Amino acid sequence: MTSRRQFLAAGSAGALLVRGAGAARNEFNSDVEARIARHDFRGLTKEDVPTPAMILDESLFQKNLDKMAAHNKATGLNLRAHVKIHKCPEISKRQVALGAIGVCCATTAESELLVNSGVRGVLHTCQPAGRNQITRTVALARRDPTFTGVLDDPITADALEEALAAAHAKMNVIVDVYAGLNRQGCQPGESALRLAQKVDQSKHLKLVGMMGYSGGASHTHGWEARKKKSTDDLAAMLDTLALCRKSGLPIGIVTGGSTGTYNIDTENHLTELQAGSYIFMDTLYRNIGGKSDEHVYSDFEPALSVLTTVISKTRPNQCAVDYGNKALLRTTDEVKGRPGVRIESGGAEYGMLLWNDGDRDIKLGERVEIYPSNLDTSTNVYDRYYVARGESIVDVWPIMGRTGAAQR
Ligand SMILES: Cc1ncc(COP(=O)(O)O)c(C=O)c1O
Image (cartoon, rainbow, N blue to C red; front, side, top):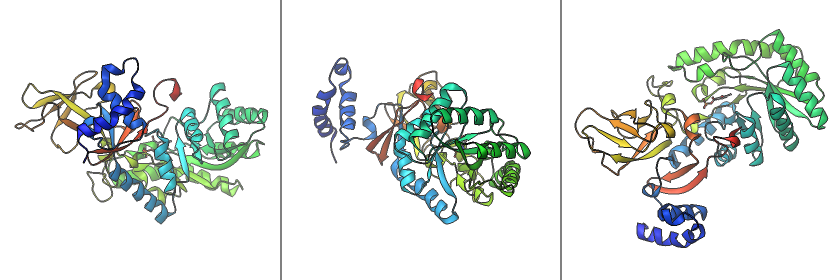
């Protein structure tokens, strides 16, 4: 095992690369950064990482990927995994390598990120609107013939058709039908049929499928209740699908679903699953209960945590960590390996860990890992995943296209 002295010595040559204005102020982090830039992780451990930081447990993450891939294989339900929870092309590529047919993206910027990363089969699960998004969507369709967009309105169909015609381009389209989530989806039945026919008759739009995303089902507590909610929410969309197919429309893809419904949607006639969170899991998901355990949704492992440092411990039964509101601390987060420790906000930069009985032996300077409550928002404020094998850091993957202009 490499000692800290060896690690820092090995890093000192790399540190020269980054020693410029300001580097002398923070030589330790510069050494770590230089090692990361060179992909030289020998001797790097969680202790070396500046906190708060996102830690990805490599073996649990891989277990989650493998489990979903095996499920897809066994059931024939394709995976087009959602990117919104991780924003990391490295992860998408691993999912594709295990059989995923592509990825889902929540925004135009996310779609650009994934298409530009070389991932094929990108589905943008929200329709583009307005000149900026329509123009960029057409550019995506021109760049990658496998890119697919959804729409839920004839106005979008017209706008896309016009812009595609002007660019001499074609685009795959999935009609988004309401499935219980008020934010999106055209009315099922005749009006969805008319929209699908309009797409089918357009010269530059190619009708390829139908989407119904039951967002309310994903976090419904209790497997049976979740199954009922998903089945109820999807019923009108599936009737619409039958109507469209009966009228001769070529709808091959039926897409929707989530981590919470991955083993329910096989019975709901979907051909594709849009699950995202299963790769990491978060505390809100862990608490919805599963088919075999009504309290814990343990089908997938909690692979992602926020590494924090105990920065003050001057009072009994509590300590402060350097993980606060800015780093997306939530009171519904959970401390890894320490059941019974509660979490409270200590302000923008601080979090409080509290316990009732005795000294839980959390020491000043100690590293504590905390499971986040909501992956989408948490990963959005960190810039990388430190991939950990036990205590060792074995890789670093960037989280891309996050807050600010790059996200839009
Ligand atoms: C359109 C869409 N599809 C699928 C998902 C499912 O993702 P997850 O498996 O993380 O619940 C989401 C999540 O918000 C979504 O917005």
